[in-house]
Length: 145
Image 1 (cartoon, rainbow, N blue to C red):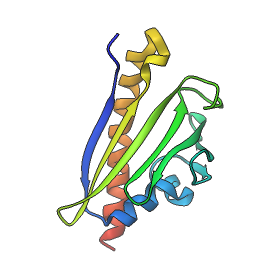
Image 2 (image 1 turned 180 degrees about the horizontal axis):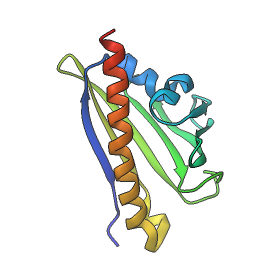
Image 3 (image 1 turned 60 degrees about the vertical axis):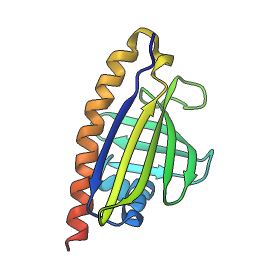
Image 4 (image 1 turned 120 degrees about the horizontal axis):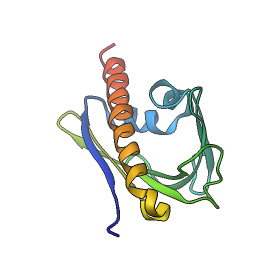
């Protein structure tokens, strides 16, 4: 089976430091992504994203190169341990571009889900479109204030 990859790149009219903060600071993550967020911002640090509607997704920080790369692993399910449950890797790359930031998200590792890999990757692809649109709107609204 060929590996599935979810990827999206967009331009955000905000400084890279603002995009970095929105991706890594819990109170800002809760403005665009989840209803509540926690994160120990170091490689190996634990965190969680909680939605009132869908429950809590745990994560572990996999990579940090501030302000260019932030990555975490998270299982596809509620309250699972990313150290032991099958998990994907979500990697954000930030680059200065055209007076703002080019943000790319790539989610890989779907093959650990076997026959469900295609369905899970399609579900998350749609989720990243919606969530990154919210991030863009949040940051561009902040930047224009």
